[in-house]
Image (cartoon, rainbow, N blue to C red; front, side, top):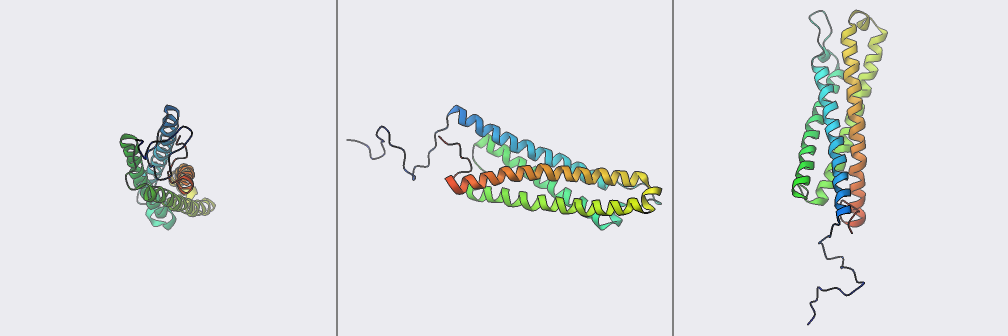
Amino acid sequence: MRSPHAFRNGESPSSRDHTHFHSTVVAQKLRRFNSLILLLRLASFSFSLASAVFMLTNSRGSGSPHWYDFDAFRFVFVANAIVALYSVFEMGTCVWEFSRETTLWPEAFQVWFDFGHDQVFSYLLLSAGSAAAALARTMRGGDTCTANKAFCLQSDVAIGLGFAAFLFLAFSSCFSGFRVACFLITGSRFHLYS
């Protein structure tokens, strides 16, 4: 007697079958894709942490301006600190996915969580960097940067590092958007199943 779950030659599994076979080529592609996401998250973490540290240490003494005296510079510090913490969490979920070959949360929640937060934090970094860049440009036109060149230079470095963190997080957002699209089309975060 034939098992109801056996397939004949040429037949494919039904849509209710949730077991997936991974060939070695597909497994390598998935590992490369996950490695690239992990690398982007590591770069985002590194640049946002560096930006926050540069802004935090941007005080030159009692006669010099302090970063916390300017709202835009406080915004840069807080936005980059938040993104650094988020990036650490996301790197942890990537490592979890590597080691366990499953997501930390249910797959549907995970893909939307990653995509939504990548989008929100990308825009947060972009708006913080834009506000601080406008302030830095205004300060260069006034007396602040002629008297305190080191303060303005370190502010520019922190802003530039924040924009670099934005770029890496925006690329990561593109990849998490790809995962959402794959999930909506195939029911899985990867389109590479055989």
